[in-house]
Length: 212
Image (cartoon, rainbow, N blue to C red):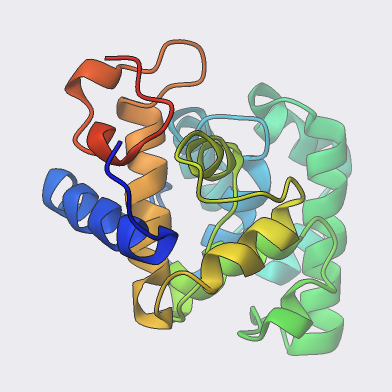
């Protein structure tokens, strides 16, 4: 691995990943902030591909926060069952949408402070919504993000919020969203959990875990 500071290394990693994944973006299918919020809630411990098979029928049935808030819970559970942990997810979606109706006029708020007060919404979900629905910079610290940052030796922390703050110090704010999207793409396509494909990795020379 090339010896350089973490700031220089992460900048080079981002440059390489941008070139490798020029179309890196959110892979969930949505048309508005509400749909994105619900899709991200459903994506917990579930693949985006699976969520995208569920949401067309879900969003055809429930078109607004009010619709979700007033839904029959068992019916809602049926729509989201294949995403796993469906009872908890359905409950959170309904409670979240009730909060949206009562506190935000049925609209998804844009601030981190307001978003994390919603049922089923932590910083990862809030950042995803702010980044992709509202164009705000952010870091979505999911399992791919955590795994790759650890393998690349960019972090010492293990708690997602602390990881987020640690990476924020290494990158300009304008690069946060690109770094998140590219890292998640790379985690899904190359630096996989069980068998990372180091020999075809475009950033292997900057990674202390490189096995090639």
